[in-house]
Image 1 (cartoon, rainbow, N blue to C red):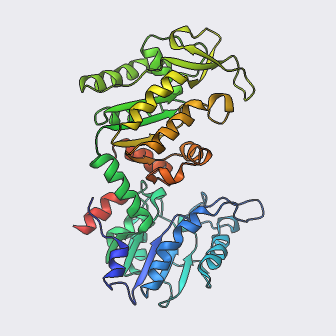
Image 2: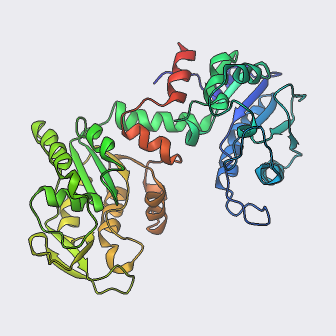
Image 3: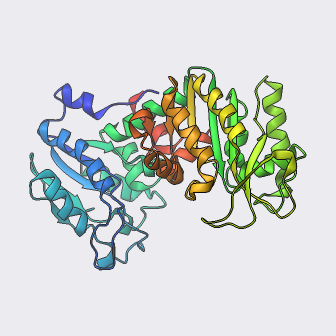
Length: 396
């Protein structure tokens, strides 16, 4: 995947004295008092900013926060808490500027945080007039917000079309590299884990992956629908019977390529959905009418773990059971440790997946953990993200 890298521009001495506009993802959670409750995204934005400062740039940074109404700024929409936290992390003043589209004064060695970009009229629809105004503010545009890479908005796409130089910051470049390695040029066998409550929310992902992966592991409610497609009973488990034909089509597409969708041979069931529910391991064919499948069984987990250990590339999106409940976490825990122990290149994304990675302490053993939920899912669907497209075009 061809694109201009901001770190390379810095090394080549092309940033000194330049006005650098960084689109970061600073959309952090705030409490009722307006304080940041979790600052991972702010901390993740620091490397690009420090890179620009060390290269001698005049630095502007912007982000969205929440879902403001365009043209109707409210105090709750303000990036003021972010400016405060950035000042602490950078150990220097970070000025917050509102009404910045018409012009910004910033000197080399300074950082200015430009107020919530989604307040600007025309932002979400990528209005050309707004994008051109933004582009005139800078010499170099740096996209460093993978979480917005699937959105063609003025501050993520339009500005990249009109800025003198458009490049990827370190966060976005790392995502682009990892995605390219996992999906565009994977080492085989390529195994994908796609799990979740509903087939309908990930049907397009399953269809896209069925044409390229060597193994497709399904879990959660999705696996229940695939069990129905295989003629197995699922009791009162969460499933989508109306999508059984779609599941059969995915199985057939994989089979036509000599690949497979492993169907559970055993499951962990309970009579109720609760942390203290009694867990019972049953053969997949023995699920009773009043059973609820809440995890894959130990035999299935062991079988899938062996498959993962011999993989060349692993893409992981979603836990395979209700891992939040101790009695139903074995499947997800087993696969998590198998991924950690595998020599495969592994990339994982999605909120529940990240929670499982943290729970089992395997962060350092997953090669790349994607930070963008919606963007990551769109990549798995086989879509070309707007940010990738425009940065590749600008690099040509």
